[in-house]
Amino acid sequence: MTTLDAGMTREAAFDLLKAHNQDPFHIEHGETVEQTMRYFAREYDPENEEFWGIVGLLHDLDWEEHDDEPEKHTLYAAPLIEAAGGTPELVRAIQSHTSDFNPDLPKPELQMEKILFATEELTGLIGAAIVMRPSKSVMDFEVKSLKKKFKDKRFAAGVSRDVIRSGADMLGWELDELFARTIEAMQSFAPDRDTFVAAE
Image 1: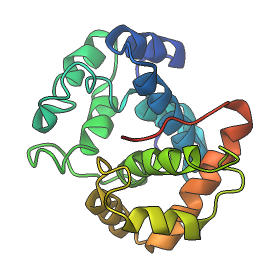
Image 2: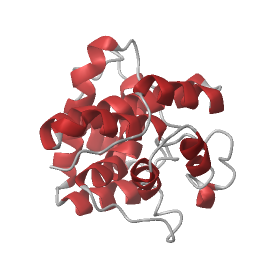
Image 3: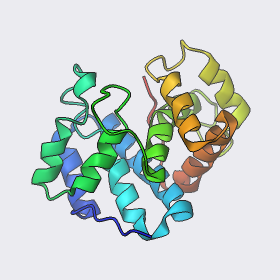
């Protein structure tokens, strides 16, 4: 198994995220995706859990400052990450999740990159769905409820259903499997979180 080096600690990555994001939504989203990635890393690549986590934490580093240019998403992030000591492998992994915006960026190849692509938008949809529930909790959230929200295009309209479907295809998973496993991932760290942020 190849050992992946992010070139920075989790603490340094979090400081970088906070330096370029003022909105608590974006910071919390980064943390949610980080923990989701760590969950999957423990199954697929436990030796590189820290790398997977930092990829998740920084995946939207430049979104808040440049959300009016979605086709350039992660292009602005690359020099910021490099200046902070981030490795080319870290930059590549982060940029792979925006290849749907920009075909010049690398397509997801590693399992880590495919999982980031598949789950990043989905965590936002799940967050939006559980905010509407009486319990406000992911712990009693089920796939059938997520499927209803997924089919309602007006609900969390900013979440790309096509990206989620493409991500499931990349992984060779049915949508139901992706839904179930992402819910399980979020349940694994939910006791440590008061709430999850909701996608718009």
